[in-house]
Image 1 (cartoon, rainbow, N blue to C red):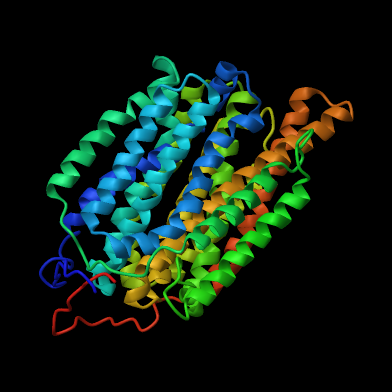
Image 2 (image 1 turned 45 degrees about the vertical axis):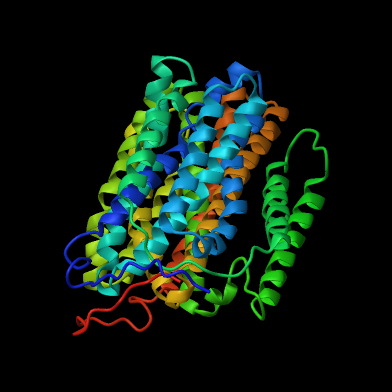
Length: 491
């Protein structure tokens, strides 16, 4: 029996003139939680020294965050159909605040990692909640504009992470990275719960525990195995671990297909029957692998090879992130007017070109070249992500919006974790090989970064190929306004 907590929405009166008010609170919360996805990227060298850990161990603070989100997000399609908007928001932000507090007070690396995992559990709900609400409320002819405004916050947040952490590290301890975030998160939680309204209906199938276990086994073990490639003395063979993870993912998929016949899956894979959505899924996954790989490599290269401070590295990365975010509204308006191909294909080509330039990094490459390449990567991805998000989610039926947004977010996080693990592994393995051959340590490190950025360039080729296959408009797009306002409700 479904509960009737429905907010009826008439596009001509609201969605066509401004972003719905409920989205403002969700965007604010999403900004603060996604900021934490990259806020430790610039702090890794400091944390390596503080806890006497290796680079490979330290990068798990980022990988575990993304990996936890990838494990939890598959449950959000089910979760968002079971609880109200306010309940989902309150639970997500409360857990995030708890994780931030644990991380700020962590006496050991293990507790800090636990705090990051708790943060990620809270973060996992926010992006699917935001995207599902947007797709429910906003008329298809104006989704590009509203998605562009939303992507401004989503894009600026991870880009601002390294700059924010760099500034805080200059002011004091690494703990400030979490202490500074906590009051903002608490304030947004309180104000959001005071003014947020419920959108849509509640109901849905019971939670399938086996699906949750299989998701954790598949995605978690797979990324762990990838991160262990090239490790000096892995506990378990990476090949075996990767194979076990792949088996878990396959079992998860088969379980969802079986559940689709009866009580309802944890993550409804019928969204993949829609070609545009499937292409969008591939493009977003590969794009996030390239983006997160570059975002991890940049501060490490700038600090470890070019001897920049954490603040200087963060400031050098900030223009690209700001350009990516500030272009969001313009990209959204262009998409509404001209469609996606005019944006996605040139954007993908720009990303590939910039990543090819970065494969030639050296000890003397001018900083302006590095800055320009980073900006081109971020601007190119801005031209790709907003149209592809909109095209993909617009291709699925309304009753699958929550599952479509959850699957997109899941694959993004898995891809980001994989991208991080792969580039760090390639960097370490290539540098070690060159050092063993007798090369100077600095030159060996540069060779490692060249190969690691080369991974990004290969991914850039795939982004271009899939971008060419994307349609210009959503399936069944209607360019003329409807005479009768539609009732928008989530399922």
